[in-house]
Image: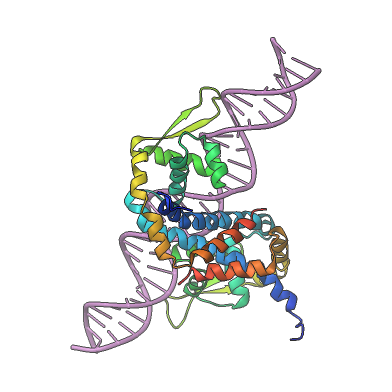
Length: 145
Length: 145
DNA sequence: TCCAATTAGATTGTGCACAATCAAACTGGA
DNA sequence: TCCAGTTTGATTGTGCACAATCTAATTGGA
């Protein structure tokens, strides 16, 4: 096959061909989670925060942000909504008054049991071979470098 | 290795282990595009709309939505901003007054040349083998089924 | 002991993204 | 011809996501 005049133009499309599917997949994922999370009163980003806290309670806002790659402008209002919903508590650290520590309430801890079946349902929704899913995951994580 | 009591719990995490990287990658991608798009006065979703229109001018709002998997609640205000910026025109179709046809202005067409180097820069930013990128793309598109 | 620099969050403003709802325009039988 | 049902966008309200900016608290030398 001869090199066509727009071979480079085609090559240029590679990032678009990769970035758009990621963008669209992220939107689709949030849409897929929504019906399962709605009964728990959570959005997908709130669910991610809860996953972090279920794994390790009492983290600072900044710690959560580093784990999820989210800044305070996103997390401050999100955590206030979780507090209003009764899932978490917010208090300043004694040692450093700048730090806001996030703790699970009893209700927040109890929510974990209700959330347990969600990954199952999502795995069903995205009918993908485990091996293919792992390859995807590895590929995506290679982007962060 | 023996099957541990939480082997299923681990399996449950698969969707989280896949969905979160996609979510984080989508955020990172928009952040990576921002400095390159800002000189053109575009956001990433606006850039996607412009890519569609550069490929095929005069589409209806709904056609753009179907291509990008976005609904009218997202596109109506986005297109109004593109119109205010002077990149596109909006007019009702003669044949069917419900349909809004989106056309590129001269300035909108001219923007294409400025946008041309962007995929290059992004490809550099995400240092990923083309083969790996293609595998990723195929895996992501398999999610839509 | 001070105070310049750093760090942790909060605030403000812009722009998606979508559910739910609405209204107008079109279509296809009865 | 009519009108029930469908299609196309627009609107409204909620919740991210982040840049830019701000304030308060802390830290580390001089």
